[in-house]
Image 1 (cartoon, rainbow, N blue to C red):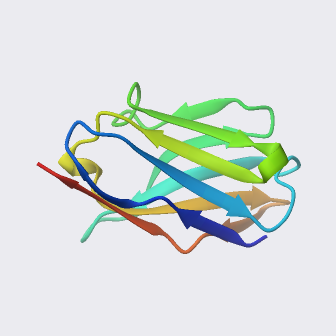
Image 2 (cartoon, helix red, strand yellow):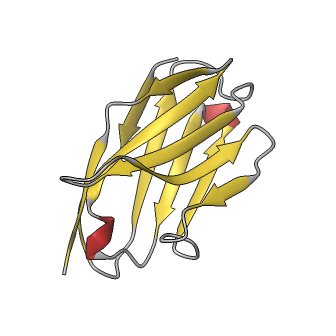
Length: 114
């Protein structure tokens, strides 16, 4: 599975941004897809995940502000980021867990200015 992340950029604190992750094949059978992020000098951390049954889970730091979703018809997963904060600044990576193999996109930079 090849994943292409897009939608990052520079946004002011309190603003919104939507990230997209398009897969090279059908995502309907992928058990878990998710967004992770890595800030400078920090380890990569989970942001949100969504299952093939559309159940979701979020890191406490983004609950109530970010929404993960997917469109199986477009083979695309999204991360709607609202009320962003400077601490959301990071490279965001999309991930797919298919048949116990991990696949990663190339990352997209999100920078939140205060």
